[in-house]
Length: 520
Image 1 (cartoon, one colour):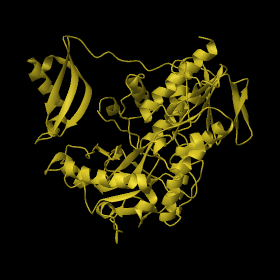
Image 2 (cartoon, one colour; image 1 turned 90 degrees about the horizontal axis):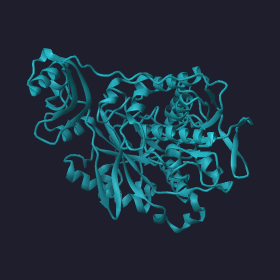
Image 3 (cartoon, rainbow, N blue to C red; image 1 turned 120 degrees about the vertical axis):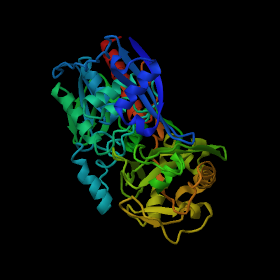
Image 4 (cartoon, one colour; image 1 turned 60 degrees about the vertical axis):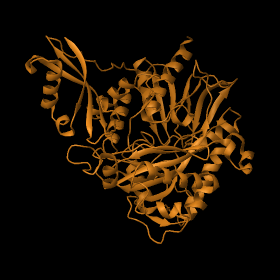
């Protein structure tokens, strides 16, 4: 017999598998010895009441029934199969490559950056020496932006594809099994690099080609059909289909598309700062006066307000995490957040951002056409670099000082390794973003008592929440409407918003490219 049920347990009881089994038996009115197996489907925290509870959705198996095993995907050898070029090795690119192999096609993955381990040297240079490698940083390199900036897997994209399948592939390649059941799954920056490396090995051991240091500089197009690409090394790669999965920071690709007259569109983005508090404060705000205790994880939050006609909201909240430098070129300062799998750092940080649409931009940016939003974001990052002292030191202010329009004479301690400096955040953020952030922080403090604090620090700028450009594609074929055989994919094309949604979109584009090649 197979029976699904819901349990609400204390954090302590929910941490003990035997207690969970006993509670399930009591709820079903059966002897605990009759339970053959328990399969947890989902775990989540309910902190709305006086006492924090853990909600567990599970299935119990009795009377000889046991959980059905799901076999791993079998991948054929594709070394001599029809090639498909994949530009970028972020989640969209990696999962597109896996899907190509599964269906008997050979992926040729072209990555501008370095392999996941070699990236670490450049990340250290960025954090310690303030040296930016434009091809190897927190945004570029094997695994994409998510590899060293958190690895959160929460998604609402369940209608777009097989979310559980993506999570299973990650577990097969080394991620912890809890990501399949947690309501807000998270791998962690300490674990994700090995997972990414294992995915690459799976691709190459089945005949896929993985090439690093191959930044695409041109497209080979004939009669409105893409036939291949040219890279910075002068190499030419040809195939009947190209999946463009370059991520949201590949501004040179947007400029290339625009220069060649290939259709792109400007789109809305969200811009702002990283807000950093002590994790202990966030724990007490979310869990109550007892705080986290022994059995609860570091608390997170999600909050949104409407301010002067635009949404102001938290983005990529990192409990027990760090703020990291995410610039991809000189003369810019960009911040992002990440957490290790343990989420045990003493700081909590979150992007707090304001949505801004192309029509909100000053008139001076309209001359850039479809690249107007990209240029606006670039200018904000440049002002952040100026305000930070022309290094990777980031401009910052105490939250209350910013909201009350005064300079911060001192700043709290921070997790941001390159350092922070007191700055005029109005200069950095501009006339559209700054006043809406002020209003948002005050409103957040009314919802979360203690959040609006002089001990909280805002650090700028958070500007890589999404792509400033959308690369259009047909809703059915997923091919570019102007260039046949070109399949824009993932966050960089404007069709995803995180690791899992990008992975699903990569899989969908791989299937679309295969259908295109096979004439279906």
